[in-house]
Structure formats: C-alpha cells, structure tokens
Image (cartoon, rainbow, N blue to C red; front, side, top):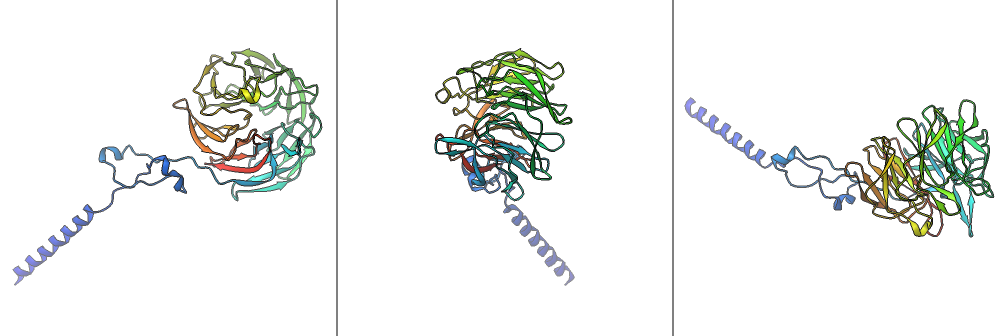
Length: 406
C-alpha cells in the first residue's frame, strides 16, 4: 500500500515537472526596440517595439533605437521673424522682438513672451522699450539677458536693454557707440560680450567692435575687424577666441574671408578663408572643437542659395569641405544647434530639417515643417529637446507657429 502511494506521488511530480517545462518552452522572447524608421511615426514615445525573437548571437548587439520626433505646431502670441529666443536659467525661453508684416512693410515689434516647457505654453511678458528685429540677445552670467541694437521701426538702433527674468521687465542699459543691425554677439569666457560687425546707420558694415561689461554695464571699443561685415557668423572656440566668418562687406559684395578675435590682445587676425563666399549662413561649434559652417548664399541672395557645408579646423586654421546638405538653405543664422549626442540639428531656411551626423560626417534627412521659415530660431532646452520658433515664408509672411523637436 505504501509502495503504491510512493509510486503515485513520483508520477504526479513527474507530470508537474513536464507541465512546467512545456510552459517555459512556449514563453515569448525578449522585446527589442529595433523596428525600421518607416513605422516610427506611430510610436508616441519615439521608439517602436518589434515582434520576433532575435538569435542568441544578435541579442547582445541590439540597442534601443530612438527616432526623431516633431511635435504638432504650437502657437505663440505674436507672428514674428528675425527675433531672438534665449534659454533662461530656470529652463524657460525668452522670445523677443522680430518683425511683423504690415502691407508691404516689415514692422519691428517690441513684444516678448515666455515659453514654458513644463506646460508647453507661451505667455506674454513685458514689452521691450523699443521694437527690434535683427538684434542680438545674450544670457549673462548674472541671469539677465542683454538685448542689443537691431532694426527699429524706422532706423537702426544703438540702444541696449536688460531683461530681468525675476521681475519680468526690460530696462535700458548703456548704448553702443554707434547704431548697428545684423551684427553678432558672443559671450566670452570672462563674462563680457563681444559685438562685431553689422550694418551702420550709413548702410555700411561696421569695422569697429565693442565689448559690453556686465559689471560696469558699459560698452567699450574693442579693436577693428580686418574687413567690415554683416550677416556673418561668430563662434566662440574652446581656447576662448572667436571665429568670425563670411558676411557681406556692402555693395552686394559677399566674403569668403574669416578672422579670429583674441580677447587677451584685443586684436582680430585673419585666418584661412572659406571655400566660397558665404553670408546669411550658420556656424556651430562641434564637440571636437572644430566649427561646422552650413549653407548661406552668395551675392545673388535668393538665387544663390547653397547646399554646401565646410568645417573650420581650429588647430590648423583651415576650412575643409564637408558633405553637402540635402537641401539648399540660407537665412538661418540661429537655426542650427548642437544636440546632446554631438550631432547638429538644422531647421531653418528650408522646410526640410536635417541632422549632421558627426560620426559619418554626412547630413541625414529629418522631419519636415509646413513651410521654409527663413530667420526661424532654434533653442536647445535643458531636457535635450529643441524649441523652434517663428520665421517667415517665401512670401515674407512671419508665422506665429512653434514646434518642439525631440
């Protein structure tokens, strides 16, 4: 009797073991985020799960694939182009000035608003003291934003203002020695701001540079460029010097030349020239310390737009040809930004967005906007996303739209 009971117990245990093994054999394999990009748009999280089980040899090589995402269009409170959009210390963005279209006239505006990435909304803040477009905006080390020059409603401006994010107000600070618009502003490593180039009141590019000191709240002369230029680029290099490249020297003449400003000596020194004349282009400092120069145009302006790009080698002072863009584009000085992964997002001067892949050295097609949007502004956010604001279409009509790129 006991022998029969033991036999039945062993049989029952064997049956339970076989049942468990069968259940394990039918269990699904691990999930891998690797579906091709064509289906990525259906994923709200930017990554899509693929069905099927990878082989043992391939499973360890699988990696999470994140695909670029562009939000539906958001709405600012004002139509604007040739404005500024500055990341504030609290992660919000100050959007200031630009112009609106009134009949056939471009009217510089004083309005400003704040983008909050937490709520994905735009809220008006105080107006600037003057309407401005083609001005500059620089976040200072004290958390305030320096707004300088630009085109006013009737003339170029020499005035400057400070935005206090705590008070939400603009107040005048010292003025430039002379009006200028279409210039560049570069925050130096010592906290001062270099103002270089731009058109003067006589419609000729400024030779003399100026530096704003936030401690004294004054501008001082800072040496002269070798060539007056506007619609150029200025890029802070890792050694603290500033690369000034291209631009217009007036009278429909566009430059290929470049020069480097040394804040220690206060002098501009010519460096290698670009492969072609270029203005209304963009320049971005790469993680390796070199500078990517993108697009722009020659003296034919709209009919001379480029697909070309080149890289400035900061060690040799030479420009080297890079792979071409997929689309010609210009009027994008603030529409190309470095991403956290070392690549560069290009999002203005053409509806087709592109990504410069730093490893391959090539431009990859990304998302599309609903129009070309010249003089749009791209602002990297603290969460790794990029805010895209404003710009105007080929009919010179500014937009109130904005987008978030992830």
